[in-house]
Length: 250
Image (cartoon, rainbow, N blue to C red; front, side, top):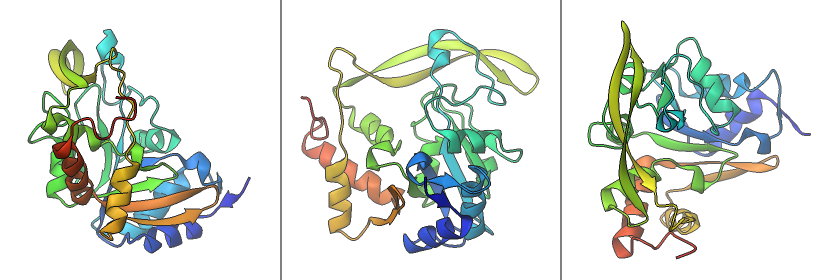
């Protein structure tokens, strides 16, 4: 397998427009980039070296065990299905994590305290950490992952009230400073009878046509980036035409 160095990652980041002071929401499938020299933490070091000082690195650390009745402790509950990179960031000694027990973020850098302080019933509500990333002009960075991985899609789905999802509340124990507290959170969950399968390839093509999507080949995959606000605008455009427009099996 191709060995990946920090210098190669830094070069790819610069090539897709990442620069000092940038704030990034990173989705990853680093297995497609090769074997990281010195371990997966190398990717974190590379990103921070490019965006520091003043930059911020956020990753999704979702875990849906709370919906099955398990307690949520933001300090120790692992992410699930988010990949080795996100889990590495979650465990970082300087990382801060948002409070939502099912759709949390782990954050390093300048805006970590701001984002981690956001606690809304839905992870994508007004005032949430996800909406705050739009206000702060975050970029989406894909390390080996494709456009379908961008979790800000759910922000757009919620605002559009898409017909293949519905609201559901979940109540359970959440660890807060000083102890445990019973809380209720909500999520715009998939309707499993519909089982909508989405493809965002048309969104990427739309962004490419507008010059708002950057991508470079890297080993077995790609490194790509776009501004989150541009991604949201593109998804909003498609959903406004037809809320089923991104569903492949409708």
